[in-house]
Amino acid sequence: MKTKKIVLMAVLIGMASSVFAQNVDGPKYGADSVSCVTNLSMYREYYKQWEASKFSKDAFNMEMVSAWREVFLNCPRASQYVYTNGEKIIDYFIRNNPKEKAAYIDTLCMLMDTRAICFPVDTKTGASQVANIMAKKGYLIYTYDPQRYEEAYNVLKDAVALDVSQIQVGFLDSYFRAAADMVNNDKADKMIVIDVYQELSEVLDDNIKVLAETEKELNTAREDAVAVNDNDAIAGFDKQIEKNEKAINNYKGVKSNIDNLFQPFASCEDLIKLFTVKMAENPNDVNLLKRITIILDKKDCTDSKLFLEASKNLYALEPSPEAAYNIGVQLSKDKKYGEAAGYFEQATKSSNNDRVFRAYMNQARCYYQSGSLARARDAARRASQVDPTDGKPYLLIAELYAKSASQFSGDIESKAVFWAAVDKCQKAKQIDPSVTESANASIRAYSQYFPPMETIFFNDYSEGQSFHVGGWIGETTTVRARK
Image 1 (cartoon, one colour):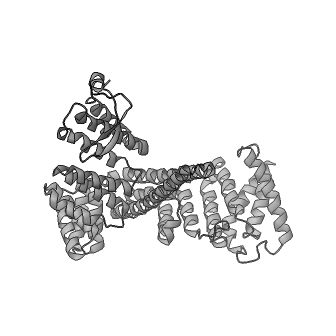
Image 2 (cartoon, helix red, strand yellow):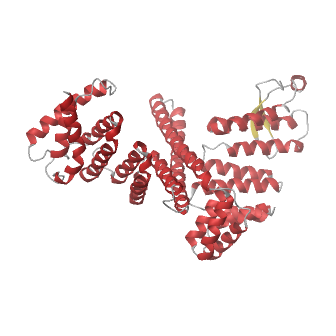
Image 3 (cartoon, one colour):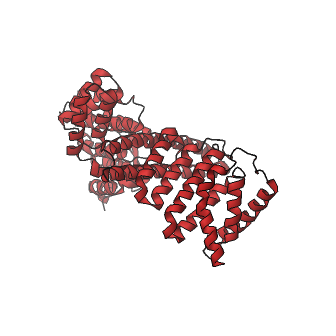
């Protein structure tokens, strides 16, 4: 049995040299359909048993491997299961045979290449899947052997260029990691990390935008179902909303990972030094100017002379929402809040979801600084509409409410703004767990200004009662006493 196992393992590795002998354009079940169907049935039965054992070593069967290999080599178009199951089989050999790991990884790569040829379109969805298959190939190369980062980088780069919209978000994380390894090992210039960072940031932002819009539509549909007491529809929407939120969190998680990985390459000093040289070489290159301003803005390097010069050059060459945003950033730093707010309004016409969100938030802060609290709230509300999963707009609105306390007179009226402020903080951490710490700190600060119980009592109110805050706020809140 041991000899047979060794022979089969050697033959499995040898599959890589047999790929060109496969009849990938032949009939679905190959030249010998009876043999193909027999081996397909045999390996699938063994595979199901192995799967039921949670892929235990004891349940691994070499007869399964032999039958699977015959299907792969002689009728590679028989089923997509040949490839998804094959990944698991080869994974088993990689994990249990470290000395042959490199050869098994090569076999896995050949498996992915063949799948892309035989099944360029997913048989279940009808959608093209070649880019995703190739991205997964790069991801697996990098996962199994990070030292093969250059190979993984090139595979992932080609996959992204083919159709990034197909690619699962987790594979994009490996693309950036491989790019970073290229630079860290002197295989490439730092610029490739910057290029990949910008490219992936835009992709992630766009997907988050689409998912956020989907979430709004699902919540609206769910509210309609609630209104008519359609419990089946409500349950269905709850599942869709949960799935959509999971997808948003996945994209945000990868975006956070990439932001963190970019930090070593993103000191303002390094970026400015690198971009200054690039801009001197091509001062009228619109694409370069966009890259400079976007990256410097994301990394809070906007105080530099380079950022202002690049922004002005870009605006002169191609007036756009992006260029307007950069001018607004510089004007706000110079405390020219009125002018800055106007540029940020132009910036909200951008097609980049993240940029629109930031434009509204910056506009809100400009109005805040100039004392226009109602306009500041309106801008913050628009930001929350752009990304309803971000809690920062609500924290800003809470701050605006607390700031306006002096505008209200009366023992209750002047304190009610803090109830409304706490409501917004609660909302912020409800939709965005990442702001929980900041929200809780604000809640503690604002709660100190709640009226004592005796003040509430002598003004003919009681805890838990609704209260309408007038003036520019115009919010209904709940009466609460200071603890």
